[in-house]
Length: 146
Image (cartoon, rainbow, N blue to C red):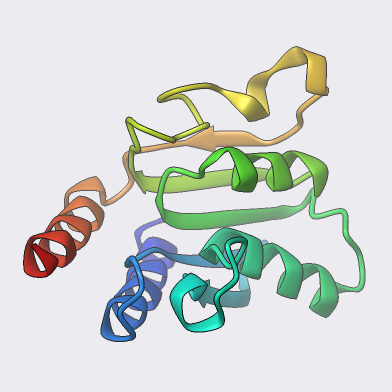
């Protein structure tokens, strides 16, 4: 798991270099990297350009199927409501995240959207993988901006 989270952290660092909130993600199928992305909201002026959504879109395109049941998304920050909803809608198999997001996180912190039985969710999630490194990157980024 740390191998994939390390790649997601590399993506997050790229985002920070571009002035984006440093969130990175990688999509994995089995033991193969499908794609990687980082936040591009500021550079694209697109409110939906979160690392997770970009990865899910590109992964579905590359795999030729919007159903991502046999894939795992590794992301440095707990997914927001939009991204957690996209995970459910893509039937993503699993999500592994680093730092919890106590203000907007929807994989356990504020709400457990993938686990809501009303949505017939199939996405399992796990948080806290390389949490310290993921949180430190975000804290350093915001500290430098203030």
